[in-house]
Length: 78
Image 1 (cartoon, rainbow, N blue to C red):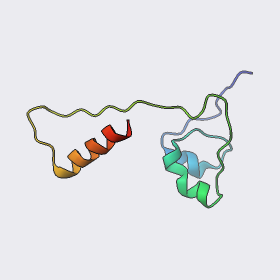
Image 2 (image 1 turned 180 degrees about the vertical axis):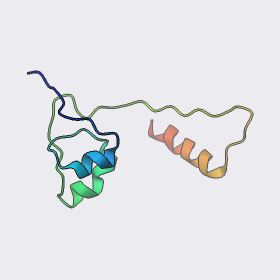
Image 3 (image 1 turned 120 degrees about the vertical axis):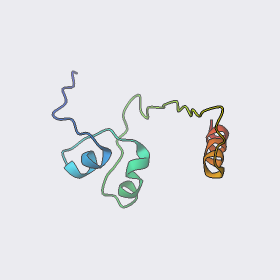
Image 4 (image 1 turned 90 degrees about the vertical axis):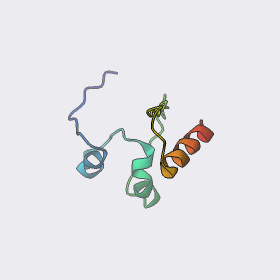
């Protein structure tokens, strides 16, 4: 089966609001819609896609408390 996209939208919110059928967006962007049953997640082979995240910062700059806490939470989750 060959897939040919019908349109491409530039933001997750545009995909959600378009109401055009099927879209691929990060799960975090549709939590409320799934909870309220406005959207459903379909079972698709090979999904979910898992991505690696990287955090960079300058070695000569001190991280603020909030950024340091965020970094620490990312390290714990990986």
